[in-house]
Length: 281
Picture (cartoon, rainbow, N blue to C red):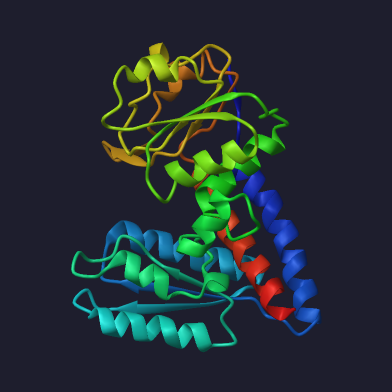
């Protein structure tokens, strides 16, 4: 039976440390600030934005949510971000994705100053990750690596397989694991013989948004299974992994909920604190 990698417990431990860090910064006259720009009324995004606000309040970060109408123009969005770039109270800027279809996501992310890009999506931060330089790392992959290291899992030389090639999770997670000396394979919708790849994985990361897609026959016994998926099925939240079946053969597994999702918000707080420290120098 697999050991649980609990994001809930880890995030609670991190919250205590982050509270102390914020208190130390405030003594030096630095109040870390995070701005979230939210366009439209997407229900899932509303939940995420609310959770980010609660996390900020819990550890003492100043937070500001800027809500723009769904029919907001690209010019208005750019102007909003540029104002935040200049705002000394704001150390981190996050644009809640996805944006309405008429807005240019890449152009929007490029407008954020790299040092305030706490999501780690700016091309400069992506380039730093690609070349193994210090930069701001996307929150979910950063959370995955934190969980693996906290559990004492040796990564060097391990075969890591990632299902999903998004710029938010799949690709940056692959780069992080490669930088930790894993041998990395990225699988996607066009991959042939997916099971042949996943069965070789010492570390399997599922990030595709398909409920219970990863079944027990796809998993190598004794492997570490990281489930990034958040899917709603019959009113319940489930992951991309068939948890009950895979739990019996993996050595470690993340639950959904209470796994990677909790760590994503913790890493957002971590990125904001690191950005505040860097900008205060």
